[in-house]
Image 1 (cartoon, helix red, strand yellow):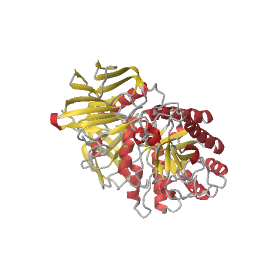
Image 2: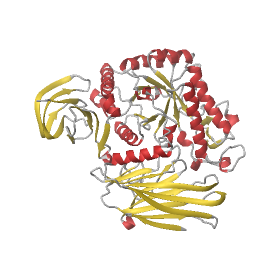
Image 3: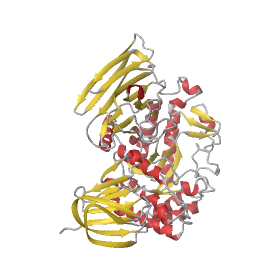
Image 4: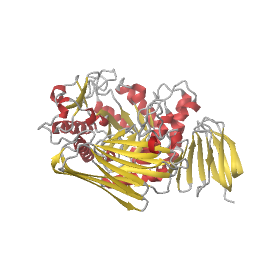
Length: 600
């Protein structure tokens, strides 16, 4: 059964599979300025499992050249981030996996249609792209493709924003809409969430020891890192990169013979201490396995690991109790909570698909919400400025209620992917602290090349993960410099007005302005526009491995320019240079310019 609607330039269709006489459904629209709201409703005489539904919205594919989405999706043969895929592929959104949003825009960076769905909790299959038969742009939301718990009614809204603004402004608009829908209940972000981090993961993986970590922390703290994240390996003597021994969450006495004293020593260096945990996993090698083996969503024979089902109160109680115990016992400053995207009903098998009286809800999203809100409230009660980190892909609007740090998905050595992930998160995460993936580089690389790891992550909170003891002296000098540079420009980088052109080209130029200061990074041989507003001091950073930069000023400006290399050493000064039109200025690879307007 279908209901059709035409509103503005959109043709809308709501299709309900397997309808019955007892199921009523509605489709309506309302307009507020440049925004159209498509409202849908389903009502049953008594609670039932709703059939799969499809909300299909189409319009002419005019002046639309690319599509911003919060994650990669597309046909495997032609996939590229920020392209317009065919309509057939999709990405899945739910409480712990991205948000049902996107934005069609043109090559001028102007929004054409920014869309957002109100249901951030249940599984929604989002199709967005080109429908070649009609030469149309389509947005399709598949609802109830995975059965939910029985319900009597369901209401949801698709928001379509056609405001003639830049794409990043449209994204901010739908981010604020989602904030309002969840009651502006985002987790508070303390100042410590915005300080550089040393992570143990890439340097050590699971090969951890108390003495090694303290050695790293002494150097990291001296460089300017204010937080350490102790990653996987502290809870096991096994180093095989699996999760068979996740679940008991007891400190390995061989690796950390006195964890409490160790944490205290690191904190005395001026660093916050965060501990990694994989939230859903319980492995066969754990003592608690037998207690929870019948309370799983699914089991991986390859990993010998089960994924816990939080619909059981005893599972939630166990996890909340575990986290509060660790924070209290070791006086931790926060937790890195991993893999919550594994709470996914589409992965469920066996007993998890059958109702069970021991559960207090059959809704997995509801159970995840109860779990994570209990974690949040329990930890805030212990430590009001607690830090909780999540990473892409579990970075949707709902997740902002449970954590105050979002980190880019793992991309070791890949500074470009780090840059793209950072910008995607910055544009759609409000004031939640955005961190880079913890980055590393080859110890035999040049300082100029290694500097790209810092340059590509400047507009985030940097997480670094090299072995600082074995780095060559020049690389240590480079680290000190870039962390100092980041700290000097931190207000502009994190709190300024952020924008970037050409996201379909992986954000090749990024800028942020706060009051009269601006920072620009360029990552390809492109022209950088300067003095476009009221700025008086501009820092232009060379992320293109180029020997020069072309800057363009529409107005005539007299400026003093200082040129620096990647170690922060001044290379040259140019006094009273007239800027008008395009000027090419020599610059060291991975160096930067400081351009100061001269008042005459």
